[in-house]
Amino acid sequence: MVNDKSNFNQAFWLSISSASSMLVSILSAVILSRYFDKVEYGTYKQIMFVYNTLLVVFQAGLPAVFTYFLPRYNHEEGKFIVKKINRLLFIFGLFFAITIFLGANLIASLLNNPELAKGLKIFSIFPLFTLPTFGVEGIYTVNKNTKFVAIYNTITRLLMLLCIVLPVILIKNDYITAIYGWGVASFVTFIIAIIAKKMPYKNDTMVVIPNITKEIFKYTLPITGSALMLILFNSVNQFYISRYYGTVEFANYSNGFITLPFVPIIIAPIRALLTPAFAKASKDGYYKDAFNLLYSGMQQVAILILPLIVYSFYFSKDIMTFLYGQNYAVSSNYFKMFLVFNTTEIFMFSGIISAIGKPRINFIFNLLCTILIWIVDYILIKQHLSNALIIAFVFVLFSVMMQYILPYFYLTFKQKFLIVNKETLFVILKCSLHSLIVGLIVFVLSFELLSTSMPLIRLSISIVAFYLLLLLSSKIININYTQALHKIIKR
Image 1 (cartoon, rainbow, N blue to C red):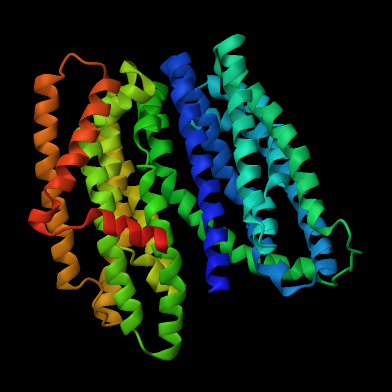
Image 2: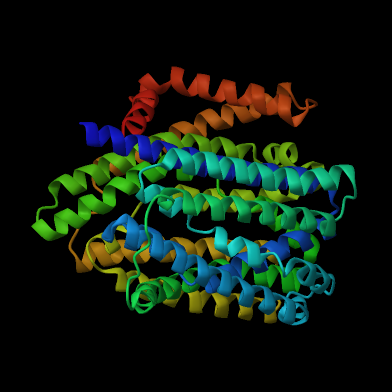
C-alpha cells in the first residue's frame, strides 16, 4: 500500500510537470500569434521546427541513459555517469550549434523561406546551452523526487515564456526579439540545470566506471534510430507545407494542428499500467487480467475524451479565434483533423506490441508508413492534386494506420488476440452518439441565441450547457461520466 501511494505521488508530480509544460507552450503560441503577423510567426515556428527535428539527432538518446543506468549503479558511480553524460551533451551541443549555423542557408532554401537563414544563424548558438539541460527529469525521477521535476519544469518553462513574450510586448514585436529572449532563457536554464544535476551527488565521492561510454552508446543508438524514424514521420507535414505552401499557411497549420491538451493527460495513466500488465502476461502466458484492464481502460478513456473531442469539433472555430485571434479562424480546419486522430487514441494497440516483446514489429510499421507518406505527399504535390489541408489529412490517415490499424491486424491475426470486445465497442458507439446529439443541440442553440457574442462568452456558456445536458441525459443511456473520471484519478 505504501509503495502504491509512493508510485501515485511520483506519477502525480510528473503529470503536474507535463501539464505545466503544455500550458506554457500554449500560452506562448497564443501571445506570439497576436503580436506577430503570420510571416513573422511562421518563420519563428519554422526555427522551432528545425531545432526540434535536429534535436533528436544530436541528443543521441543520451537523456534516456539517466533512467536506465543510474538505478543499476550506486550513488558514487552515478555521479560519474552524470558527469560523463553532461560532457557528451555539451560536445554534441557544440556540434549542433555549428550544424545549424553552417546549414542555415540550405535549410532556408529547403523550406523556401530566405528570411529563415538569418533567424537560424542568430539562433544557432543557443543549442550549446539547451542540450546540457536534458536529464534533470531522469536524475530526479530515479531519486524519487519528481516533486522537484515539477517545480523545475514549471519555473524554467515560465522563465522561457517571460523571456520570449515580454521583450516582444515591451521592446519590439518581431521574431528576432523572441529568439534573443529564447536564448537568454536557455542560458539561465543551463545554469540552473547544471547546479540541479550536481545536487543529488554533492556529498558523494565519484567512482570511475571503466568502458561506460561504450555501454552508453550501445544502449542509446537503437533509441536514436527509432526516434529518428518517428521524427521523419512527424516532420513530413511541416516540411511540405513550409516548402510548397508558404510561411503564412505554415503559421495557420502550426496553431491548428495540435492535440487536445486533455487527451494525453487522460490516456497516460492507462498506458502506464498496460505496459507492465502485458509484459507480465506475455511472460506468464496468462492474458485475462491484462485484457480486462485494456477493455476497462478503453471504456473509461472513451467516456471521458469523446465528449471533449465532440465539443471541440463543433466549436473549433471559436476555440481557435479565442486562442489566437480572428486571423487564425482558418486554423480550425487543421484542428478538426487532429481531433479525428485524437479519437483513435482510445485504442492503445502499438504499446501492447512492445510490451509483449515485439518492438521490431512497431519499427517495421513506422518505417513502412514513413516511407509511404513522404512518397504519397510528394506525388500529390507534383501532380497538383493537393493543398496544405490535404497534406494534413494524409498525415492523419497514415498516423492512424501506423499506430492503430496495422497493430490491430497484427495482434488480431498473428497473435490471435481479441483486442476490442463487443462491450467496449458498444460503450464507444453509445458515448459517441450521445456526445454528437448533445453537441449538435448546444451548437445550434448557441449560434441561434449567442450568434453576436464574443467567442469567450459563447464558449463559456456553451461548455457549461454541453456538460450539464450531457450529465442530465446520461442516465437515459446508462453512462456514468463521473465514475469514469473517478476511476482514472484512482489509477
